[in-house]
Image (cartoon, rainbow, N blue to C red; front, side, top):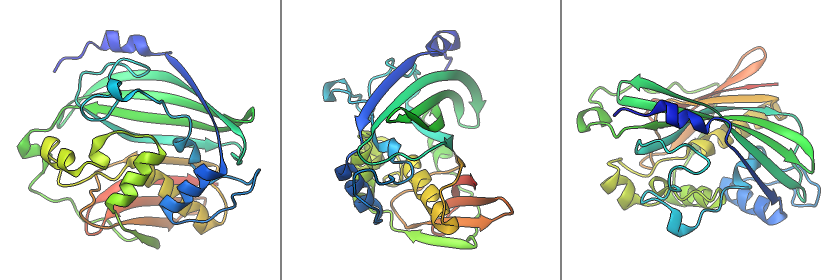
Length: 280
């Protein structure tokens, strides 16, 4: 497929602003989803990456596409490729978000590029998010989105399996249940059906099961890093390498280095799915 990159690049500089009050109820639902505990008191520090659950676009149901994504051509450019994935990102933490504060997210399209990959044409959209809480700058985020074609049947599921991921110095097992995936979709107001609609994911999209969200994996990894070091990192970067499905449990893994933690996720017995680095 040939893309009109000049047209798509006219979206560079497009801006969107969303706000939401962070309530104790939101934190309670977030903690219930991840089986964690934290204070629900007014003014208490919120869990890391709670902002991914806040100020999300509320598109009318009638304006969603058949896959559950908003129709193309709004804030994001109308890339005419069927599959959209969160390919990676980078977070710089400046301050904490606290319960009872008004969180403001300003998003700007920074770049749109096209590349040729093994599975066909790839279009990358880079979005920068500036997060403020009660007027304080708390977080800077770079979000890397990739659009791609549907792989051919013989390339979608390669016959040669990738090597199993190693087990880290620190490792934790996570059950990839449909309840977990549905709850995270609800928390983030994410209508993409590949995360909660098994007949659609397997029958229409051709996947072997439901897909474990990339942002959820990133949230688990950054929380795991903070648990290991007993402190929130100053920076966290991640990159999606392969897909985790709900057919098996997956693991969070971490190796210590001099000034960082190298982290990754993997399905049990499977290859690395997400690579990440946390720095303090």
